[in-house]
Length: 391
Image 1 (cartoon, rainbow, N blue to C red):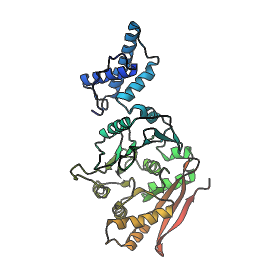
Image 2: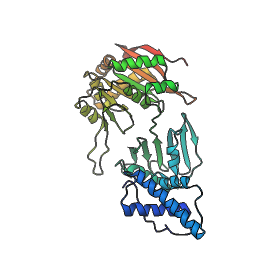
Image 3: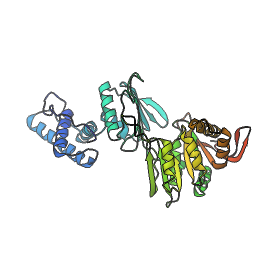
């Protein structure tokens, strides 16, 4: 099961709050009836509703404390038993883009690109329990030998965890998978990109251009890349490669690949470099690399020169900076990599760079689009400006 259905010895204890007793009985029923909350959420909700009603019927007959708002009680009990407890309401809130825990009593969320502290305090034990629930379904782990973990939650949200003694307290980040902006038209509607820029991007996608999406953290790179892929032709076969699943590509023929951490014995690791090579053997019409940050840049560069259209994201402060970074990252693959070869190959294979930025207001936008000319002058890839935002 995806959660631990612990003993419900307190189910009928009169000194416990009503919702705690209901949660205990719900755990008992799920265990006895063999219901997995991850596989049968509708059935779990049905049982939860029945248990809340049962409690109120019993309370009315015995003169005990009843639950006033049954619907709210069902939501809280489900969050306690099958969800993520006190965090569930924030994770369900569509206005929350990201949630992070710096310490049990220091919890923040991001709304509209801006962060705010929430009035919620947990215990160390609650934080550990929540992380264990989140990691369980992903098959990933975190312990003293592996103090970092990246994982995808069942809804597609990205989880990152760091534990002591690397940190003072368990540090948790959940970047939510938001379905609001799925297409380029959606991004136009919220002012993230102009109609003029979208025409350029649609043309690039339709003609099979190689595209790099750059920007700082939270600038909207993954959202933009997903929207670009949604603009691809429906009959195209797309293969995506990511550290952890984040991209949402709404096309009929898609294969999503995810890297894998080494096992407890140190084996079984699958790197992004390996995935890029395997992806090229899967007959892609377009290869998509979620984020390039290490030596896999060399494999992406080689893929860009195979004739298979590709797209990727990279952290950078500008489009020019993105090209400089992609010129340097392949050197991490080994000492025998020639920097001039890398620059020339990039200049010849990258068609456009789309740079995204996060404004002080919290709004995300496409700041510029540049196109390499194919020339390299004094060690710098020459580009021409295709689009620049003025708003």
